[in-house]
Length: 433
Image (cartoon, rainbow, N blue to C red):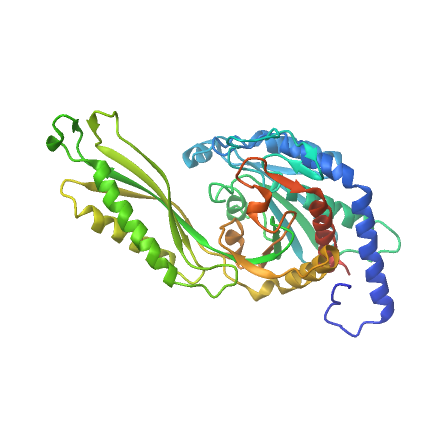
């Protein structure tokens, strides 16, 4: 099965044959250099990028060194130190590799993030080892999303190897590799910073994802910090205080009741069900013999594409305030930590979707569907600027299969190989004359 021809669907058979030969040449280059690609990914996994604390500049430097060995000069764009510290991280240096083939034609950007959550406990393989066992590469970010540093880099290398051959058609437009380091905190100082500074203005975007589906929409996310204030007192005379934990319990019960109501609000985007709320962190009190005077709650509210973020935030604040008002002496401070809009479906990404689905189906031997995802990602920042985008890259069918954000995160190397071929073919479709 060949990828669809351009709009001139009646193109001669010789053109079909030429395109098929180009796809075969791209595949062969990826196969011939796959061991090199795996070593590249291992080197990336072996440099920690735990966020927090978020000291990501060393990884960017190492990535730049590795890219230079391939003949790819990368632009290093450090985010000002104070802005990073105010954001809650230590260092961010975003990278751009620009590969221009002709003045005419689209700019296709490929974006993957290098920052990851800390490894946690329970690993049977070192989280920064890059160990290979039974066809799997283990390590934090091996699947999400340093794998696509590799798939995107080697897809572009395959494309350029084809372009240098005498029989290949000349490429049009250009490719930009965007390797950024702020996805876990929301993306504003990663791709958001590059976009705000006018450092990248692509016509299309391909963002890090998994191999068995093309993601075309995702949820939004509201994160809030709720500080519940009471009055400390000795546990022997609790009536002299106001128990902040009891106030927090009232608020938690109200939030969880509201969470049950969210099930009645359904999304029309396949792959996305309904809104939901999670309380991920609670801390407070000073000692076992003291009535707690302060409790802090951190919550995460996922928003489906059909919801209005301002209305969602107002409703969560209302639920909290009403619950707090039922307990005399309790006051609350509510701080927004993150408001990430949903990424909504966009028909402008059809050329990318069609090409990826066709090549993915051929190379993986099964249909590659489109869907939304309940996650939220950096892609929303491109979508907000009207840039057609899709999420696709190296990885399994689900986050759960890869152990992403858990112990023993891993990547099936055959998925990396095939995804690299899919991306290389898709770039050829987008940029081939």
